[in-house]
Length: 295
Image (cartoon, rainbow, N blue to C red):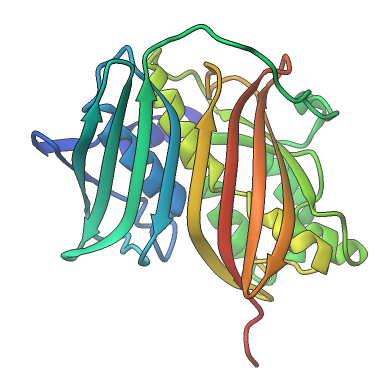
């Protein structure tokens, strides 16, 4: 798949079919994963919510729970509940339904543009994205560390719409290099081509991407290779995002991730997304199941 086709596939994935006033239907990347990717459901739910809100109101936060594993071979229906439309804010609740049961619960709040106080945490140091290996170069260099040669091919196919570059070693590389690391990871990302000038699309695309590497930071202190190597099993439990400033998903964004705690079979991860010029545009928090498989 070339870059244009991959990017169009992402745009099509985030272009839901409206089947009633507040009911939408989405499809999945059925050939690439054995279950529906959580970021896809979150991104599609954001599309559904955003299409019921006045265009001038931008999303500023979302909170979501992953309830059941999604079936990639079946469509997902998104039902939107218009909780509130106030003078400055709108609130929406979305339930994603598959085979007659909810698989995902989502709420988001939107706000009219407003001036106010301004401050942010400075962007941490990170290498320039152009100095880092492309996804193809990275897996060409490190793919032999994975137990199945098909895994790099599937990952590259699944991420084909994204130029995602590791600024620090992901768990499977860090584990092979010798043990525990600090619970921090950095990746640069952008889409492989230009997206349309629709702010909601850029938000939805970044919501999709935000679930892609975040829980890796949970594994680094334990010297585990992670989901791809099979020494850990897990899944996202919940996901929250706060959108601070405008941005584009087709321009370089730094995703700085860390994990403050792992306990009780769960791991907590945090992420801060910065533009290349140092503006903090999104904050992310996610908790996931993290279990060692029983022998």
